[in-house]
Image 1 (cartoon, rainbow, N blue to C red):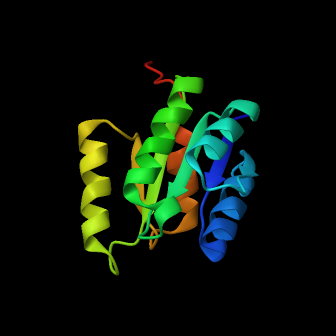
Image 2 (cartoon, helix red, strand yellow):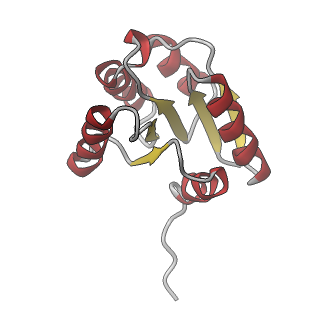
Length: 134
C-alpha cells in the first residue's frame, strides 16, 4: 500500500485531499508540523512514498520553505515523490513558481487547488507505479 504524507495547512483542502486519497486505497498520514524538519521526519518515520504540501504566502508554507522541506525529505527517502498544491487564481505568482519547479524537476507533480479531488487522487496513485509495457 502506498503511503502519503500530507503537509497541508488549509484544513478544508487537507480533509478533502485526505478523504479522496483514502477512498483510492492509499494510506494517508497528516503532518501536524509544517516545519521542514518535522515534515521530513514524518516522511521518514511513516516510510512515505509521496509527500503532498500546499504552498501559500505564510512563512512555514511558503514556496521557499516547501522546496527546502522537499529536499530534506528526499535526502531521507530518495525514492520519495513530491507534489505541491497551490491556488492559481488568488496567487498566480506562486502558481508560476510551482510550475517552474516541476519543469526544472525539483518536484514531481503539482496541482491547482481547484482540481477535483478524485483526479488528484488518481494522479497521486500513479506517481509510484512503474510503467508496464505489453
